[in-house]
Length: 353
Image (cartoon, rainbow, N blue to C red; front, side, top):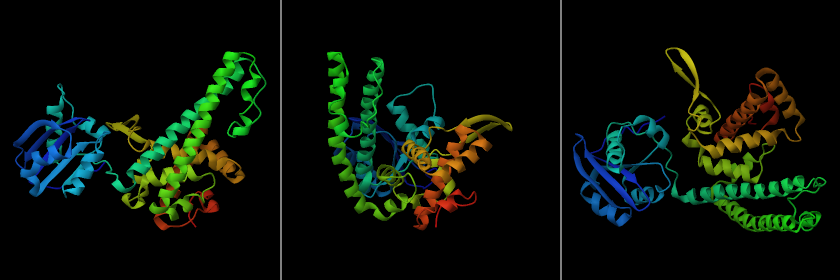
């Protein structure tokens, strides 16, 4: 956890909502200079803070409406701090809670050097990252439709569907196998939605790949040198990381990817683990998917997993493999080197040439 420690003349805490925001400005002595509820738009904000622009820092909790405020601060050369929502919740508690109190707490934490910092994702690739997240969400919806077709097939105790439903030609006559007309209609609906998702997601994937050429195509191909990592996993890892240089150590990177468990201790006694929701959920998904796909058609990888399973158990073995892949990706992107499977499978290697 890192805290914002810089000193300023004025500290502005913003409790931000979609249409309104509560602003609290403190000076170095902690005296309130301004505390009011205003409309959430750049024109109103610049009018309210114009007297304090000579040395102002603005902090806001990380929630879904922070994008425009970050862009506003960067355009007007104002220091901006994005507070980590979960850390802030554990630091500042109280009996009463409202927008007025929250804005004062944010400003006070900022002045005291206790604002836990979240990553202020730059504007240039932020929307493309969100588009990729949306693509992955819709792909899961498509998978639900495909699963519903197979579940309906099982409901009527029909022979297993031997064909791969990924391909449209295998779906065209699928509804005819169901004797009931309503069941046919239900399956037709699922298949029509799958066709629509395929059409739209194909366009999105083409657009994202085009944007990737501007961003970092070299790192994209480095990631694809890992057995099992394809287009979507490589894109997800790159866009969620942004630049690997923002992680000074591999330990910080693994923690951000939720690939490590943090022990919770008190009075020398272990109370389990904590912080499971701290970090990037999309990177955790990507590395666990990569670990599963790394084993597919890879006898050496399967043998290595078997060795881990014998030592740590089945569930923990896959977590260790995902963690090791995360470490390999860190050093690959740092050193701009391709993946070396033999070195990776060596217990002491990090998987770079």
